[in-house]
Length: 229
Image: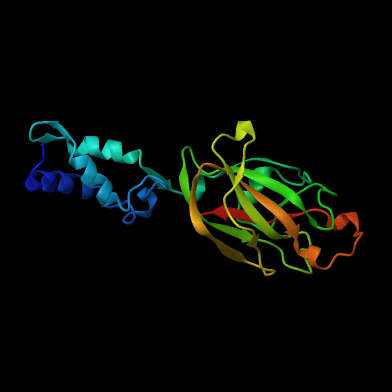
């Protein structure tokens, strides 16, 4: 049985109007089609759902379609909901949550001798929200050389759907942090839908200049502040 075009048009107008925020509209409410959901656009998703009949010449009401469609979307990342959960090691100078505070008076640095020749895999783990969100960029503020030899130079992003299982997958290429002051935005080549991530720091700024056996003071890594978009 087919549903008339007029019927579908009525349903679409009742659903798409309040949900134009998907891919546009109010930033605080913006949502995205979940990766791998099989639809090219939100309109295509609603069009398919609107064609599913309940009975002859009757389809689901707009509020039901909205509910179903929500399972195929992911929310825009709200930086205010990001939480720092744990880290691989720390110097203990400041509480971990200070790495999310926009200030140059506190920082996260890994423990002394946690790297070798300025290289390793030290991380800070974050929860980006109560559910999966779209991650598209990392923002970092570091003290540059010569003031900040321990500042992160290269890093990657790992993700997990259940961090308690300790099963993590790499979801970004190696990202390079420039040797300069102020905020810098590093865009991910491919945005990812995630809830739990690790910012894995791979080398510090001094690593490019260290000898075979550098002083232990140079074998840590960190940053002032990090945030995600």
